[in-house]
Image (cartoon, rainbow over all chains, first blue to last red; front, side, top):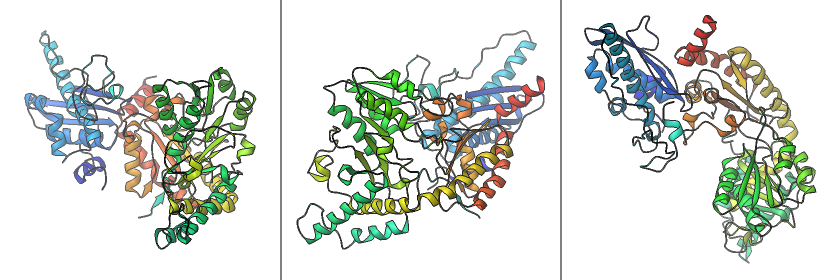
Length: 171
Length: 394
């Protein structure tokens, strides 16, 4: 059996919304090359909704499929709805990913949240207000058991014991 | 669709002659080599014949060959077995930074058992400097283990030069020759090593079949205690069919080696020269001259290896990669990082290993197919974006 299901393969082979938006309202970046996956999401906002989303991704098949799926799912959502989009929802919509690849899916939603934060921050600035980013802090999830790993300086996943910290944290 | 298999380092087709030789031992010739009757005799004779063929492949004596379950067991056996047998003398061993995990993790286990391990570095071509081995040797060093060639980057190590040092200092020297034995000429007396691992599936033999050669007089402790099979050094009823297949594959490899090398080198050199020229921003990894004959390895900048591998697979081309995403540990290959490549570049690893069935048309097909796939991935890569924008800006 191939590693990825048909839906994942479809989004990998024919990714939707690849590219950049000129003069985007918000940009979000997530991941680093150590981990193997990096993505940038560009958004255009109209009436508090995601009018357009484009992405660029450096990464494996699942990272590309996840980026594509996030862009499809989030388009048309209100910003609040999009902020609630979870990695699990994306994976479910893709019909599942190999367990070891689950951390990649975090990057997609996370990059989107960062793009929205970026937009809201700019809006707040225009009004002379302060804005506290809502995207989760860097940390990430253990690729083996998907438990959240916090930035506490340990090198092993406390839940399953896998030594994967260097791969799953942000910079 | 055209199919091009260029992942011979991962698995090779079983040689028809080896398969034919094995079949009786999966059928009517089921005897136990330890049995003292006709059935046993037949199995025992077949094993001894295979032992002679494997010994002859590497210029060794048959009684110095111990059959194992493959390269991993041979390396475990050599590293742990030789270190443990000499622990009264000392508890320090030396390996290179780019050894196979069966050597590195055996060394790590020895660490847990109270040994100290020195990892000697490699240069940017993946070559060990014999002087570094010399410098790493201590009073209590009881084993040096450096691979003959690396399967990921193809670099062949200066084993003879290292052996000259270890021999002078009377330290047993093991080499993992899984990538070379049966592929290029390997002679234990010319290399002057003391133990050497080999695996049948590196030369069209069956998987799950390997051997360790240990020079007479070198001490080694068994890993598998059991009966007196393999001179008491490796217990367990022998994998007769696997051993017979390995013997046949060794015999054919020895006979065909020159022709195979003559066939592989031009194909390899074509790919190594033409692929980077066609795609751009492609780094050849490993040594250009001191290199395995059918081995071409690259890092394609700004893209990730697994995605590349999947796109190539969609066009019928099978290769492998040392990127983090392709590994179950989700870590970029320790071999590529040891060359000093940074993570982003190591992620673009693509490894083409050719075999005797590979043709010039296969190389044409790869050269025609791959550039547009790389372009496709680069067009969606934020790293490529940054590179282009930095170029335009500066």
